[in-house]
Structures are given as structure tokens and as C-alpha cells.
Amino acid sequence: MKSVYKNPKELATCLKDLVDLYLDNLMSEEKLKVRILKMIDANGSAIYDEEGHMPVKLHNILGDERKEIIDRIYSER
Image (tube, rainbow, N blue to C red):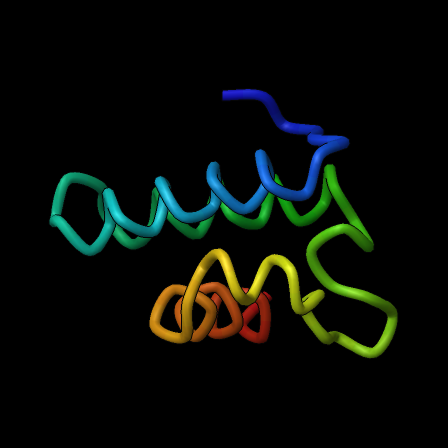
């Protein structure tokens, strides 16, 4: 898994795959938190802007359920 993505579609696909592994009980919540936070730190404003909003393109690819999980992890940091 790369940590820095220049293409928003690849970034969204990677985030989607991580959350899907968690939802399928193939990854623990703690491991998911570590990986998501690492990706947020590495990709900065590509995932969340200064106001804490996710770009619409990412949100559309991820869907509401996955976005809520990522938002929860981001808010708990």
C-alpha cells in the first residue's frame, strides 16, 4: 500500500478497500485507525481541507457509510 497518492480516484479506492476490510471483519478497528490516520497525515488536504471537510469526489466514491467511519476516526485523533 502506498501512503501518498496524487490521483484522487486511487486515494479513494485505497480508503474504500481499507474500510471494506474492516466491515468484512478482516481487519481490526485499531489497525484500521492506524492506517487511516497514516494516510490522512501523508495526503493532507487531499482527504480533508483546513475546515475538516472531505472533497466531494472522495465522498462520492466512498459512499456515506465509509465516509462516516473515516470521519469518526478523523475526529477521534
